[in-house]
Image (cartoon, rainbow, N blue to C red; front, side, top):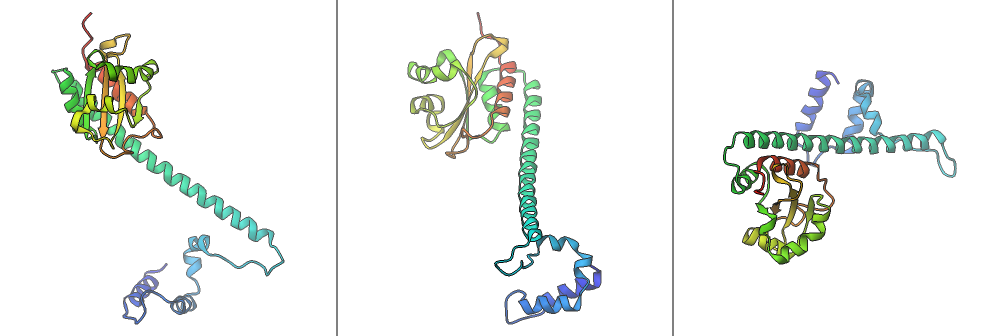
Length: 228
């Protein structure tokens, strides 16, 4: 669209009118005065709906065009979702990089320090790093099945486990992520990293666990090996 046409359209929009927004007559009037608009802005044709033949006649071209447009819209939406995921992954990668740098610069490799650094780096409302041997009998029993196949757990956790890991820091309606850690290259699970969010779906079973796995690997490298 030329600058003159754009300026004229903007100027007409700015004129006071008794009706809110453009009317159908305004659009028709504008198109009559600018018959070359679609030549200057051919992308507008992608969104125009043209009438088909009167029933009961059917137009193959008309229906093909409708299907192609519908497919194009679905592909555009899928690309938008992929772009969103890519942006979220880029943010997560940046956070993991920052977390790794902070861990490398820290001399105190205690569980308390790891808890603090996790809370300062990631968007969580509570974080705990617990030695597996320090868990009470009730919690250990609840987690026994998960520890047999310790893929990071996301979602709700049993009340006994939540109370022992988080205490008052996480309400009953909150959600958690549990990560099994083998500290210092140990061949057995030594710690559980627990992350909590107040939102019920802050951690949920539908989300991926790739970045939680990486947090677990960094935690395993940070924590000292257990004493024999």
